[in-house]
Length: 222
Image (cartoon, rainbow, N blue to C red; front, top):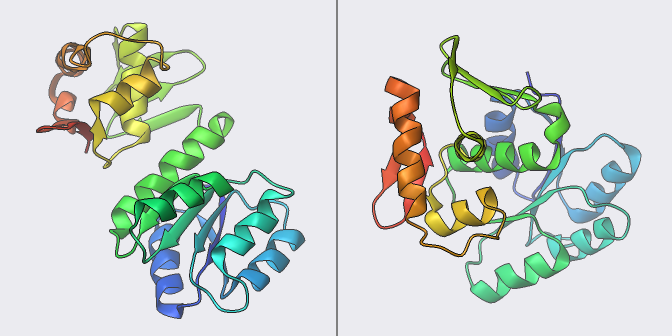
């Protein structure tokens, strides 16, 4: 059961219900606001909101203005929702402090995966043990077990598996994997990912099938 509280801000009641249904089904506690002004009131009243999903186009106070006010006092993770898809809008959002940016329409399943990934990054202390289909990652002991058996992974294989699982159901490019697992300090061929994936799959046995190859892009844990 997740202990994170998420504030969903959207003027469309159907969209709020959709997000509430999917996120609640995954164990999150959801509170809702129909506009930016109400969102700021709720955010000021409750000090245990872990993430905000914020629509751009809203009456009373739009998403951009709401985000500006929030960023004056808080670095709470924010996922921005918008019907726009232009690059300049995305760049504008990141400049204001958006952590993730998703254009409508979107897959609720992918949105939930993005929420989980963002919370894992921002609140690692609450995610010391990760388990998916018999694969258990212990962050503290730095150990991976598969169906109860210890998996003898190298440091990079451990970090690679952890990164893939924390972004499950999201297609990741080789460059993005390198940037996050190798911490931006690797300047070799990005195909090094392929060799690490091959070794990781072999050590995982049948569970290695969870790591899917995305032709022309990279990989996805599914």
